[in-house]
Image 1 (cartoon, one colour):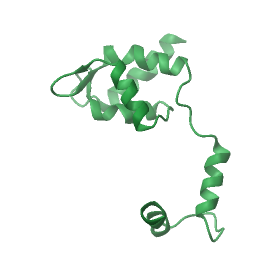
Image 2: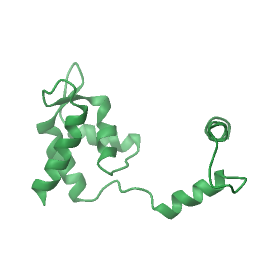
Image 3: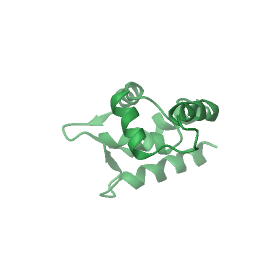
Image 4: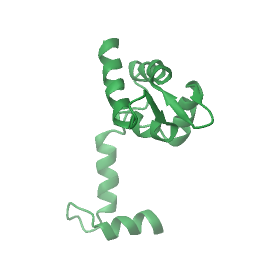
Length: 114
């Protein structure tokens, strides 16, 4: 199980490893974690980064430092997604006309004005 999880993490990491040198920009960590099915808020991403030794001054994260921390996150099932029914309820609240979709304009309005 651990080997399978580590393989999944490594594959996700490699997507963001643009120079193929087993490092990613620290700003990519949230995206990598979320691509693995975990949905931490920004404060939780910062907590994760505190556990990972970030290379200064460039702000790069090495796979060897990220892998054990992220493996534990996945094994502990931290940062699980919001349940589908809660998301559906939130969508329905935004779908004022009950048409089954939200226009781009309505979404922008909700996100910027309300």
